[in-house]
Image: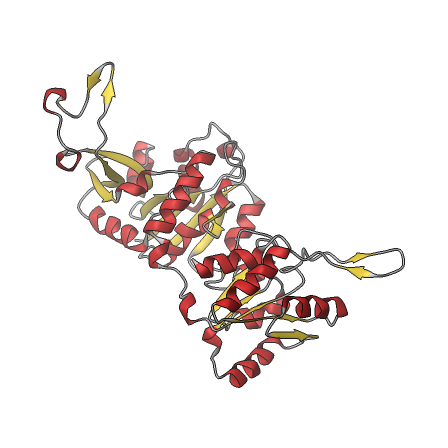
Length: 379
């Protein structure tokens, strides 16, 4: 008997384009559920998609439990039901009737490993499980109060409230899904989650609210430990620039840097953190930029970035755990895999984005991505 977590992730989304992989709190939206499921008791995680782009992003994470199911075009339309793609997958891989099937929705990114595990434990006592949260709002319909006495209005803290489906996950057996053609049936148990998890991401306005809630209630407990950082380094091309190489008719080369990044370096220096750049190229314009910024360190023509930083750490009497670095391409892989805090711009290559625990920043190189990192550091 296996436990399968199933995440439908259709490519089309009219309200929020490419919603399932749009950057949410520094990571593609679908990442958050995949990360928590990877650490849970489920045996296999399946992402059902019709999008090659979603498939590429999901595979780039490198989660061992995750696989992609190519859902049919028929079950990828605006009118296609979630049950239809569930049944398509169950039939195509011939799941055992005794397998446990957990439907997980990427638009509910707040769900943690402990929620999934506790839901599975509760499932042992019921035919199905759905997730709800308690709402203490007063409900009305047709001019009548549905959940309180208008002549004896309770205080909010005394109000029993109403359980509302939050859409985080549903659990049932494969046999019951096949027989009822539905995600839940029979004796249904309710797994109650915190009230903030009621927010689902279906509209642009939801996105703004959800990010704020995610940062407050989830990420505050998982934030990177910036307090240990003594040295901040950045790659140049693709991070401090847009990765473009511009040439005049006379063959002169020039690049576009972002002034906001320059101020970011200065803001970090004021906190006592030393800053610098580390680039494989050896160009005079990079040297001039470094000099203008007043950096503590600038390394040019750096072929072995990891060894250079190891030597620098020895000279500064610090460890690699006390170094933060932003890089975007494969020549940054070794260093990014060893520093205390690794980060990459939104336009980084997939191999870099797949480094475990790397911070996915929202901005592209040349658009102030180093400043974005600094502001996270300072906050």
